[in-house]
Image 1 (tube, rainbow, N blue to C red):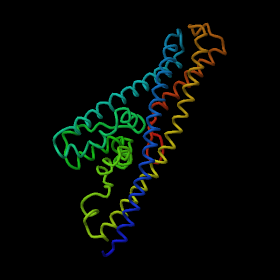
Image 2: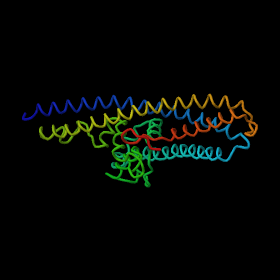
Image 3: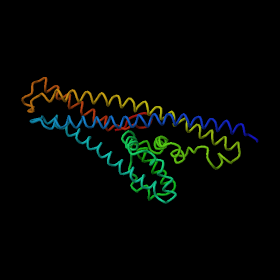
Image 4: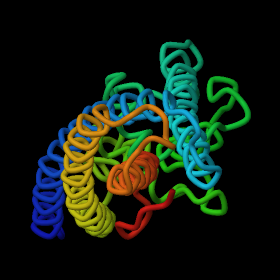
Amino acid sequence: MFNSKERKEAKEDLESAVNSQKTTADHLKYDVEELYETRQQLKKQIENAMTYINSLKNVPEELNLTIQKIELKIDRYENLLKQADVEYSKVKKQAGGTAAAGIGAGIGVATLAPTAAMAVATTFGTAATGTAISALSGAAASNAALAWLGGGALAAGGAGMAGGETLLALAGPVGWAIGGAALVTGGVLANGKNKKAASEMRDQTEKVVAINRTQEGLDHEVKNMKNLSEEDILDIKSRTLVANQYPLDFNEMSESEVSMLGALVNNVHSSVERLNARLGENGQFAS
């Protein structure tokens, strides 16, 4: 058949790229979940430190301001968890609906297990759509699902549609179909003219390869953040243990104890900043 060899080679290249991407996505999904669990441990350690810090008396105003900032940022993380849970529940409910458009838009996100979905949300951010995804249809529904994973519009500091499409790859083949990088199924790729099918498959291969590179970069950043968070856990735990031996009245502390307390508060502050950090485009964090 005319151009059949070209079509066959294009299909093999696409399948190879998809297999490579699947391996990368599996690693990224695992590492994102590991980061989520580490961050949950960090949150507990921060809360333990704050229990001690809030038990102190006669704390100077300057130190109190930092403590208030820490508490606000802990609340911010808690709110993200709640928001992510609400949005994920919307998508999950919509994916089980009867409307064909609704099923198409949300099922890729819904194939992520709850822990994985929360891990994605806390690592990369999420955005409320303003309207339940189940109430949307067609392209609007797909865009909403992608925006949820991408952390909302670029203007809001999220990765937007591009980021959503990259992260939706974590959901596997179903996600690819929603994200636009359709696998070799139906339509022109399966039944169309060989030359046109080969061209479209090459285009898809380029897209898969690009997303694979992006995910490799994200995975590197995720591992780095996990390592830093583990260091935070150990640092705060050791400092809190030492500080628990100090007087509970700031006025009764020695100069060295005051200095060590200040270091603890500052380190808790930087740790809660890291707790709230989001991976943005090009491996950059956005808090």
